[in-house]
Amino acid sequence: MHRLLLFLILITLFLVACSEGLEENTVKHVKLSDLDRSISKVSSDQMSVHEFNVSEEYNWLEVWVEKYVDGELVDDDFKFSKGVESEGHIIFSTDRDDNFSFNIGITNNGSVGTSHGHDLISKDREVTSFGWTINDEMVISEEELPLAGKFYINEERRMGFSGNTLEEWDDYKDDYDLAYIVKARFTNEN
Image (cartoon, rainbow, N blue to C red; front, side, top):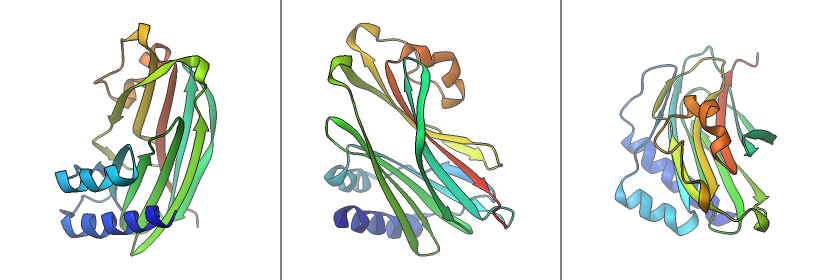
């Protein structure tokens, strides 16, 4: 856990230094450099980083993971929230193991909040990791925003969603044996 926290702090410092200034009320996927990707491989299998810039209208951020089995939502209980203002980052990473282990980090104004969760992937499903899709840029509203998704399929079902956007998820969700969608919502908690 200490290694994860140190990693999140280091990547946050780098991202803040490289931030190009984001339009207000926008969340955008950050393209990691080769060095960032190499560093992330030390502690994770895959990682997505989104930067955000919010107006005073929004002061609270909730990030959660939805689990789908055969296209049906079966779990959305893992949630992580943090107060936010102005600019920050949402970091989501998955670990290399037989479980779907994941980390969520929210950075804002020099503070870092982290949470860790996992879900045992049933051995009898015989699924393999198939895709990792990330939304590039979205306008912030009080609606849920799909940030990233990790998809698993049975070897016999190579079809569907790869290369499509998460907004099209409802059209393709039945093509996957198992899927995890990371979503966020910005609100005003006053």
